[in-house]
Image (cartoon, rainbow, N blue to C red; front, side, top):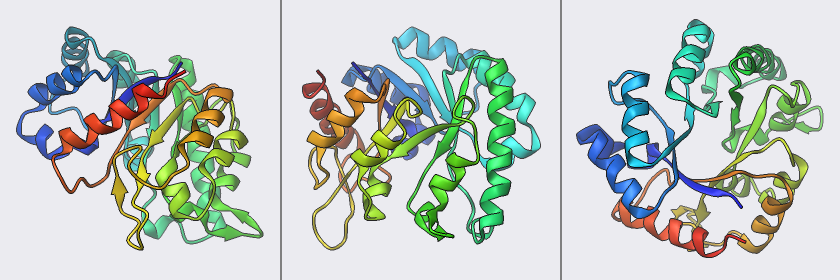
Length: 249
């Protein structure tokens, strides 16, 4: 049964103003773990102590591509100190995703990074957006990335909103990468032409098929993320949490 966590980027403005009090609010809502997007100026050990005190699991973190390139060993060391289970590369700058060769270079970096993280017993992978669904020689860039890397070292953190935004099937992608996607980014999409971000269960994604695929594919964590919240972010993530909690097997 997957646990439910939160990507703290969703609460970035609150985190900037009051990092630890916001973590307390996350715990109070019932979330079981967190995925970091920055550490609030704390050392890994300080942050580990804080989340342990709140009963939150430090599930994963998004680490910028530049940090993986420039200070990989330090990132692995800090991730181990924080007790992370997984680390993900969250984004590829536009100037570095123009050609198939760009994605080949990324695949090589992901493979190298994943091998080093594995030595510390930390999973490593890539988080998608919609831009990876451009085709090179008849294959999407995202699938090419995973073809060019070893599943033992490079996981797929599938972002379901962006898969749907690219007019692909979230459940089909979960099934395609069964055993390779321990974490899913759970997002929803408004059914109108804008296709904006929505709390999970309050949009147009087919959650029945998603849950069926996730339950059959070894998913360990549902990570709620809402890139932009039009209302109160805490209310949005509470709504998402309640929907997911009510649909766990």
